[in-house]
Length: 102
Image (cartoon, rainbow, N blue to C red; front, side):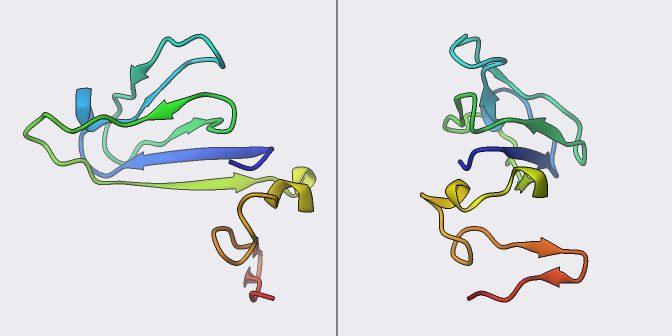
């Protein structure tokens, strides 16, 4: 995860127990809990600062979700992309749309 990145996770189906995403509340606490939210609600968390994961789904309910990551313009820098290169994993979105890959 890039420095300054904020993660948003939005389930489209009901999530609970092993069909959810787990995260700790603060870095290093190890107090992992499953997010349990209603479909269409968003969870905002700093995936670059806390451990998060999923486990094999042992429920009878399939999880469908989408996630996206945001870096505020004020926090953007080339160093943010030392691991993930722009245009490969990340794109730059402007009010006019996605910038072309260079």
